[in-house]
Image (cartoon, rainbow, N blue to C red; front, side):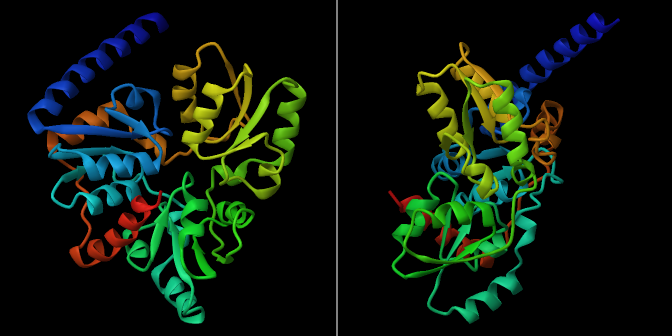
Length: 312
């Protein structure tokens, strides 16, 4: 019975993939998928990447329709950078708790208290917050962005863990918002110690959204893209990975001869995983849910994203 169910599921997935290819041609659409998506989504994506790469692809594409398989703020960023495109997301419930931890009123109050500070906002934030921002960043370029601003003082929102990591690599005074990623913040020193005991030959690579004490234990710290690149190019054959488990798809694809252990079984973002292949096909069939950003917000937010893309 189990084998029959697996065979039926495989046949359904084949049909869905065929339907998806047909719809992409009809709609002139591309599929952007974050590294934290389910394998079945990453398999059919035109581009897989972290927030930075996908923002670049959204800004550059000639496609008329962008289907963003990620969470809502990512779809917003795509719509802001490509306002003339139709931007779809497979499930509009795919939110980001960290993005919800910062609000416009609170940020405005902080700006009033520090009028000479530059506001640097992690891309994991709403369009409204980006509209109150001087320049955005991602985990892959956060240090470069902070060091690029002309003021000595920086208001950093919303991830305190990434902010702490950046603070170790800049002379700027940073006023750090108290937000965090629910998934990465869950990883503890005990988790790393237990995994190192089980796999003494493994190299530890973690995301800077993890707690500072966890980051301090790592052999390598970097964005999702940086972790993938490090593991691909490393001479080591075994790794303990401290980021969301969807990254395993690209890690295994790039380095099939290497062994990857995720540092905790809880490194799963439930919001990223609400998208699936069936919902992806359905959203292209119905051209819904569409991402909408009010023009007066989009125009302000676009400046902060475009400034980020200009940092080299």
